[in-house]
Length: 297
Image 1 (cartoon, rainbow, N blue to C red):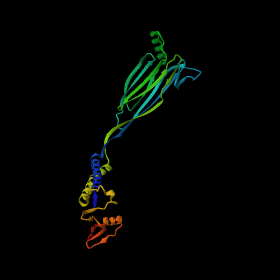
Image 2 (image 1 turned 180 degrees about the horizontal axis):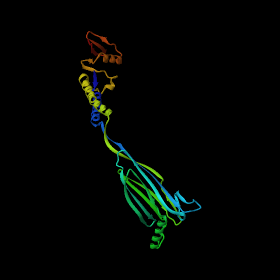
Image 3 (image 1 turned 90 degrees about the horizontal axis):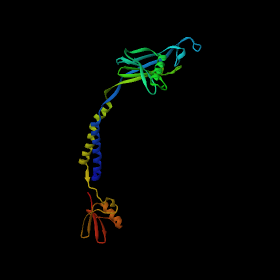
Image 4 (image 1 turned 90 degrees about the vertical axis):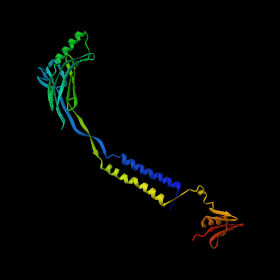
């Protein structure tokens, strides 16, 4: 078979590109990769409530109520009840917590109480909130400063440190001479995922990588076979005129030898002349010129 040189070059470029892609894929594909997996999940669950112990009164009656609004005139005492649990499979459940109570205004703040303790797995706190004392402290500071700062608040902050994480709960109470309003979330659950990096093996990528090695050889083998078995010929730049040009081999003394019988027939049709068969050749005569083609045996 024959193949034009420019066609062979295009084919060779395509086959070499396929080989290069296969080799690159075999080198770059890595069946091992790093991924993050969840080793454990640390779950913090808490609950917070405020309870007031009341004097004898017509509104609620004497006793203890859970509330978010405290009327100071009928309240003997008030406290916050807080419970926290820590759940996980492998983490260290030992930790510590910090309790801090501050009296705050827009212009100043004062730490009223703070302490820290340790725990394991969880803990329960009962934190007294002496609103009468807090308001008295606010009045005293205002007297010392010679002005009353607006919007005094009591802020309770409980910060837990365990299992490599910090968890915080806040309670805010507006502080007035008659009524205190509390703002807080009664219960909260928060999760922290403990992750670790592991190496995983993708068998599909490993098979593909192994298959790319022999695949890279096939295009080279095809190229070598074509180069050895096929005849690579130069492209005739005048091939586009083949319908109008008769290929000749030689011409002398009124005798023109054309390349083939097909070329001679083409010429005969153009000249409107018959093709004459001689012993060893075909011929077309035209005004003293003889066109011949050898008979192929």
